[in-house]
Image (cartoon, rainbow, N blue to C red; front, side):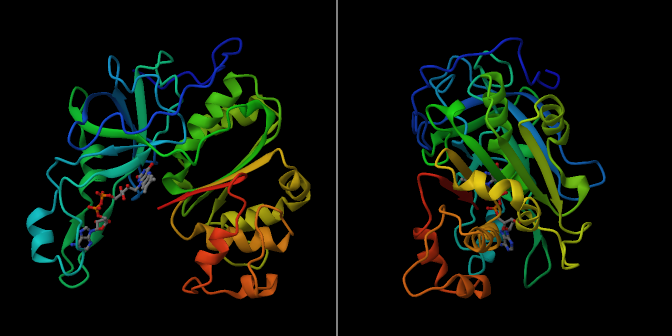
Length: 336
Ligand SMILES: Cc1cc2nc3c(=O)[nH]c(=O)nc-3n(C[C@H](O)[C@H](O)[C@H](O)COP(=O)(O)OP(=O)(O)OC[C@H]3O[C@@H](n4cnc5c(N)ncnc54)[C@H](O)[C@@H]3O)c2cc1C
């Protein structure tokens, strides 16, 4: 299969919206899906190796029964299960053993990359690190397993899971501000394909943060939409290559601040939804910006001032309270 077409002629109706199904397949009874395509989506020169992997789920209960914004579980069975290593080091990484399910966001629309609903796509970054004490190389079990698969291989998956990071049932009635870091971009790929193929006419912004320009995933696809739809605004924040207005590293929140003139009134509209997806901790940068613009997506917890939030260290015990105070109907978050 070559790179999928991003837009079909005419508009496709998603009405009624597919039902949100959960856990059709479990660790005890997983789905064996066949790898039908895979291609590298990080630049060849990037050490943050990322792959787009397409799995055939036709004739399964999951075909046409997942929604963009959900995830699937992958049961790693590959060579990097680290079992011996982890047993020897389980005081360091308890529970990082083989066979434990790892979740991956679905990166394809409910129509799949084949437009027939027979496939599901994942966007995976290889996790590679060193053992803190010995300096020994440790390869993440599931991410390397799935990045290593060959076309024709069978992969055991579970799910779909998640019902709190979906597009609304009437998606064309809303504006969107999507913010991603790293592989957090995965769900937005499917969401944008789904929106524009239904004839989306409101405003959508995508802010994508990566360390280097070689790590911008699906750049060609987002440019495709930005070139054709003036209501889609695609902005990257390349932290190690670009400087913010204070001469420091450029993060997603710095880009949001640069576009405040267009974003502030948009974000305050009840028909604007904001989504955050990617590295755990990205919210520590974005929430303070939302407070600084007086956004109604975040409420001020008792006893805290906006200034307190601007100055809070990441280690602060106040973050869970701030988290609970976000408007969960309009500000969605999936960080890991
Ligand atoms: C809702 C959700 C959606 C997600 N979506 C995506 C997605 O779309 N794409 C994506 O790439 N990821 C995604 N993730 C993250 C994913 O689930 C995995 O956590 C990630 O791929 C790492 O899993 P792994 O099995 O490769 O690494 P693990 O084996 O779990 O190891 C984790 C890390 O620890 C290191 N490590 C392991 N053992 C040791 C040790 N003994 N000593 C030192 N270091 C060690 C590994 O090298 C690795 O860096 C998502 C997570 C969630 C919760």
